[in-house]
Image 1 (spheres, rainbow, N blue to C red):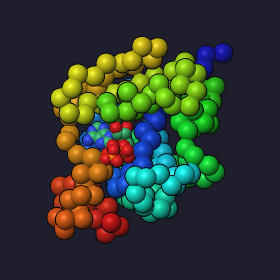
Image 2 (image 1 turned 45 degrees about the horizontal axis):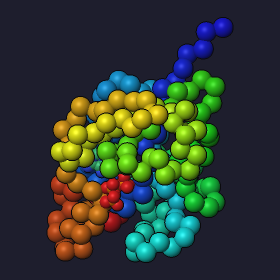
Image 3 (image 1 turned 120 degrees about the vertical axis):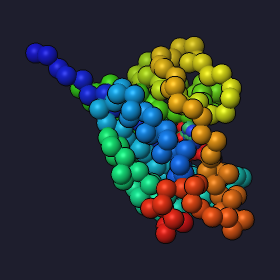
Length: 186
Ligand code: ATP
């Protein structure tokens, strides 16, 4: 029997808040034709309060992500990482999504590439998924040894959640930073 594989992209993040860089990333990934569906997972609340400062509660980040990406074709926002108790590990999410008829690709920004080796069960994860890497900044990006994947050809979009939060805290106009639908939820 011939099984048609469903090509699923997984775009995980904190989305505190979701911004137009995320939208550009998802639009590029969908336009690449590499995916039948893209699942956006919003990370749960941090297990250990880190010294990075307070993170917006997961329920609000989820609502913002749903609003931000609602209009994007092929994209579904999932609360699966929020419903799971304890810390968010991509390997757990990957195992949950990887049914027999699925191929899974992690859609990640280039800033995430150097962290992959430190992720839980990194080698196993590398054997289970492919990568679709989005450029961030001007640095040349490479697929790390042991992983398979492609580099997106999109022009880098110079936006991050940190930058967006700083701008908003300064009372700056959110237009041009976050999708319009997110503005009432900020
Ligand atoms: P922070 O400022 O806290 O690092 P972030 O903007 O990177 O936040 P996350 O929610 O941590 O946002 O990112 C989720 C995913 O989106 C990551 O893979 C990240 O690399 C990617 N990403 C974020 N901003 C961009 C961007 N401007 N272009 C491409 N990918 C992006």
